[in-house]
Image 1 (spheres, rainbow, N blue to C red):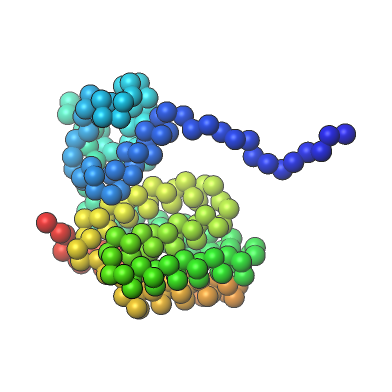
Image 2 (tube, one colour; image 1 turned 45 degrees about the vertical axis):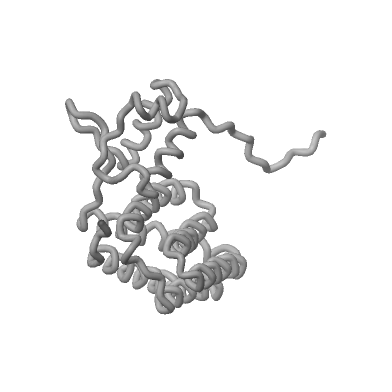
Length: 223
């Protein structure tokens, strides 16, 4: 009898998926600014694709909430108000807390070790003074936390929320800071996961998200 392996099949990424990923990145990093209109002809020409897969990709981003369709006007990149940022952080906290629950039920020692490595990357980025590197390291910690949970559903929803977070951080890049206290908050979360203390990890995560929200909604936008 032939041996069976518990492997997932390789799935080739479709053209609309590739386009959606490129647009998502451009929106997250401010290459397509909040509130701007997406021109179908210009995008198709720049990306070197036909309008069919481009429309499908933009429809995906509309469903994710990153684009909004205005009747008789077209598609626009969303603009994040303070209320929308608060809603986004409520969802982020719920998803990341759920991920913490899954982590402490599994190999929390290994997960905690990986998260502590991400905290060390934050330390290294802060030492350079490079704000983009700091925010990248910050984002990587939270993305890795959810990825380690092994939940595809959590990761899928979290991905959209992190794109919105990146949009906010890009707009506020000049005022964004990763401080020693900020890094300590991440280290505290990672240590709680490492020790298998789910309630403490969730409590520290909630406090951290509240702090992040306060920073984002009080910081002046860069010009």
